Length: 294
Image (tube, rainbow, N blue to C red; front, side, top):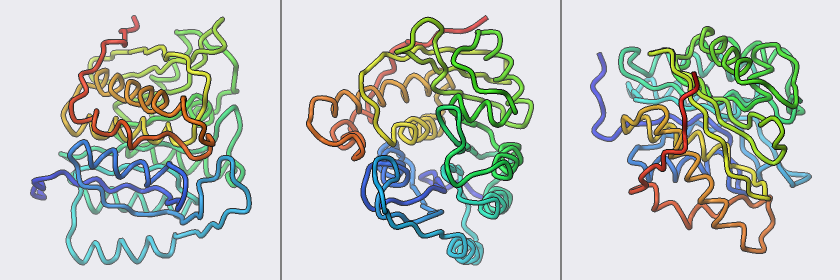
């Protein structure tokens, strides 16, 4: 068994954008503030994040990932957590599977996979069904997954819909958990009759429990907030918070970050002013906004 590090190490497998608060530029400060060491494994290098920008530079780093992992293996490194976001190809999925198998202790680890595939009912431009199939394979190794509503539908082969009943979303959560992960969190779930609102639903196989949080509406949308949400989940679970407390902390922090940004006249494509609220992660007391779902 590998020895546990005095400060937990998180291998963060995400893309790196030179400008715009998303992916590794969000993941690293959030998780570091919550007391863990971030070890980045970049999947791609971009001049800017993609939402709202055109003609950005993009470089696939699959070959570089292989070289990094080879060196890490020679150093006998180990990680308490693996946290993945944007993966650019099925080959990168294969590399992450090897990373999980070779660099973690299966008896004492956290593997959170954010299955980045699409949004608003559609796959992202560079992806096709082979990527969806690959992601279905990858989540079999996850302890926690955080798909948005579109990604949950894609993983399950379900049609995208504008509304869904509580019983249907519970069925989705259970079926996703049956694919491997013990804990499933689905974000951006539509609220029937309230077009401006969305909910977060979660399921923990241990105890067979379901939770729901209805999110406060703010008339603004910023890139990177999904990365913030999942990063707080990672940091919170490493601090041994329960699943509903972790979700509550993540939602409250995202809302704080959006509110801190909303009053400024900056372009939405720059992301939220997370620097203004990072320190609250050190002492945030969650507000009990979640509820159990029968």
